Length: 64
Image 1: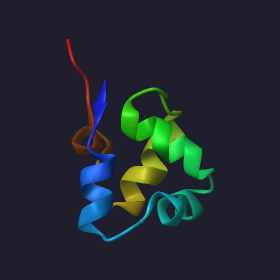
Image 2 (image 1 turned 90 degrees about the horizontal axis):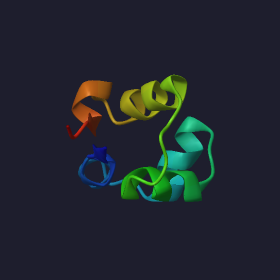
Image 3 (image 1 turned 90 degrees about the vertical axis):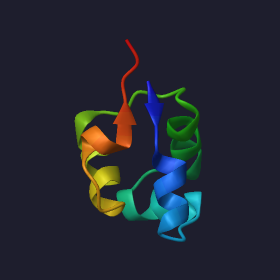
Image 4 (image 1 turned 180 degrees about the vertical axis):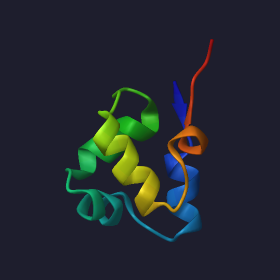
């Protein structure tokens, strides 16, 4: 799974720490999400998508 978190976060001029505070997680969690090393819960995926003003489908790219 790949994510567009870093790209969309940059578009909104947010740091990892800013986004982490918005969704109630640690900065490291955002880092791991961006690197594809962490599969988020549905709630976290929803919260991140909402914070970045996008959809879960647009935020996460599932490779076959």
